[in-house]
Length: 345
Image (cartoon, rainbow, N blue to C red; front, side, top):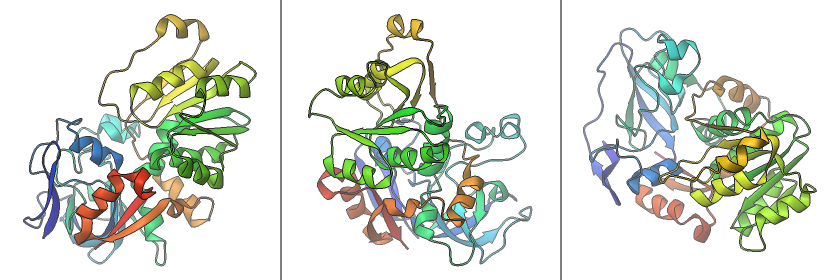
């Protein structure tokens, strides 16, 4: 089979590789039909995730068709259409029993990280019964790919960790795929005002179409001053960081109100400066984390009932064999006006 393989910082190749086989009774082999590229994959290629070693197949999102199942698998059989979760869950360890699947003792985020991932023609999914979801016939598979990672990430780490409540004023810094996922899912909780901050005017215009009440373009005035003017000097109830660089986290520290929340969603490759000397007296909470995908069943219901449409995030489509071109487009998102790409096998 063909797979997109990490060869060290800045290096990747679309190469021939052995097709995965069942290794444990709980494994499922999935023939990938649609996958995508994540901002985390770009962080890996920059060398920000040293646990990823040369030779690893990248990717942790996608949908497909079950090819083979281990002897202990009960919920799936060959031919079933499935959604692949970015997080693998054994369902039995202490963390899984707390729905903290990100820290499963025999799983967590391992696809495209510690084991071969989904940017390939086939992928092995450990603990298939707990790490796959059946796809109803006729479902929008492009929208479902967004439920592998970015939608639950935006909801869990941005909205729920940020404790968004009805009537809140919230700010999302970063109008990329995860920031847009925060925007879409924050509306489940009826915030009163949603301010999106980004450098790209095209993304900000899209954010307005997706439900942002206000937008601020970085480089056109001071975003901190504009937020304070908007809020009468109070600041925002929830500041959500969705980029992963020190400058955007610093903005969050400056705009959060007394009693507010900073929710860090972005993947940081460098340390940030925590201004605890200013924040301690404001009674704020700071949260961060890796998605557990415990909201995926709820998101599947919301999608099935047309309460959310993450398929709108897809801007570009490629054949799986054109994945190197897709990486170039996704890695130059501003130039290409790209949000999410879909790779069709």
